[in-house]
Amino acid sequence: MLPRRSQPASSMTTASLSLILLVSCCVVSASTRSEQCPPIFLLTAPPSARVWPFEIAQPLYVGARAIGMGNAFTAMADDAAAGFWNPAGLIQWQGVKVFGMNKISDRSEYGFDPKGIAYTYRETAFFWGNKIALGVPTRDPDYTYYALARQIGSYLAIGGSLKFQRRHPSDHYQVFGYNPAYDLALLTKPKPALKIGLLLQNDQIDLSFERVTLGLAYRIQRQRLRLTFSLDLGFSRRSINGKRILTPSLGVELPVNELLQLRMGNSSGDWTVGAGLSYPFQFTTVRLDYAWINDTLQRSNFISAEITF
Image 1 (tube, rainbow, N blue to C red):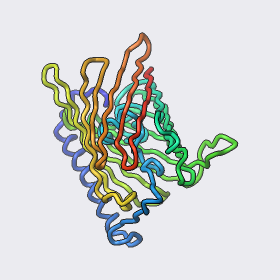
Image 2: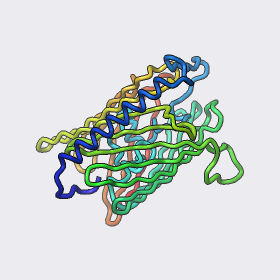
Image 3: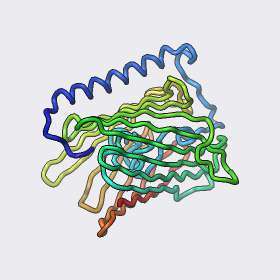
Image 4: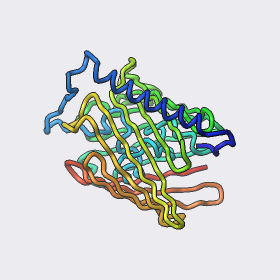
């Protein structure tokens, strides 16, 4: 977020926490009472019809840094991939960030290549991103995101994104697409070392949310030791491949020095490791990230790059 102002924090902190908890409880409660859903909301796909998490309009697997931290990135959301993970996080820097990611092994099994660009000026941020899966049986797993974020006060930001599914392949560029949906997001920083994020994910233009993710990120700093722990709790009305409705993800990031970062996590039972290398040039900063995830069916390697202007 932007630097704190000198106003008292207690009232804003209490209000931010209360708002996030209230929205989370209301959305989860409304989802579990919906008459349109089965009683336990398990729409399980058979093993022969494996559906990867990135084949639908959700942020899992976007960004090698996020994967390295076990896909626990809702409260972190401090790089260009925030447009997917938590649009409210886009206000945590100033300027332009551009990123792209590539699956670098076993692309005969599947490919996944998200990309995006974010621009933040003062208390407002804009984002465009696209994520596309290749070689999967799902029809048109190609999504474009347009996001907007705004800081409210010193400790709270809100954001939202419009998501469009695109036909693939296509003989022309699709600015929007079909099957529009949206995400709503909150990010608050009640303490210097603590961030709380909330992402509400809609799969069609109505007032229901298919998935709700609550994220926590806490930084520990003791002399030369700096550790950031991240936790995501995902609540879903429908499970993927028989996964449980409550899906926890955990991650940790250790900056070894100003250039190198090490990461480790667990994404709903799948272990992940990763590393990042950043270098500041005169007018820009370049960061390269690598991640490995022990998927249910195979082990996958990803690499992503981000340039900050």
